[in-house]
Image (tube, rainbow, N blue to C red; front, top):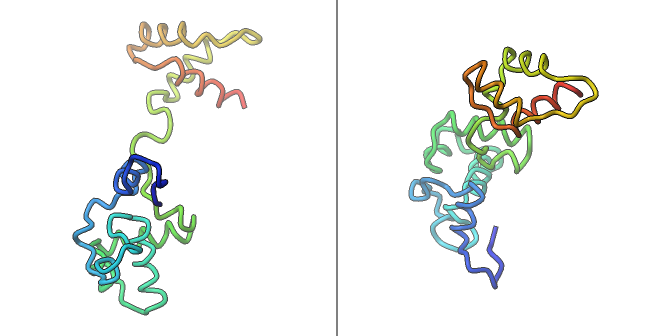
Length: 153
C-alpha cells in the first residue's frame, strides 16, 4: 500500500491508520526485507505472506520461517489458517474491540422486547433510559436499535 504522490502521509502512517503496521519490523531477518524498497518489514501483510511462501514454496521449516520473520510458531499457524480461509485479506490483523453488542445479553434483549409495541417505531433513547433505570446498565441508543433490528429479521 503506497500513499498517493500528492498525499501528505507516509506509507508508515498509512499502515498505522489501516492497522497493518508491523509492531516489530526489526525482528524480520529475511535479507529481501533489508535490501530494497519493494519488501517492507513495516507491512505486516507482506511479511506474513512472504513467511507463508517461504514454507510452502521454498520448503523452509515452520520453525525456521517463524524465527526468520520474528514471530512465534503459533502466529505462523494462525496466519496460515487465516490465509487459507480468507486469502490475502486474512493476513491483515483483525480490528480490536467487541465484535457484537456486548452489553445486550439475553436478559437485556428480553427486557427490550417487552417494551416494544408492535407497529410502533423503536424509541431507542427512551429504551436506553429504561435499561439504565431498571437494569442499571448504560447502553447507547444506537446499540439498542441494532440489537432490536437484528431480532426482528
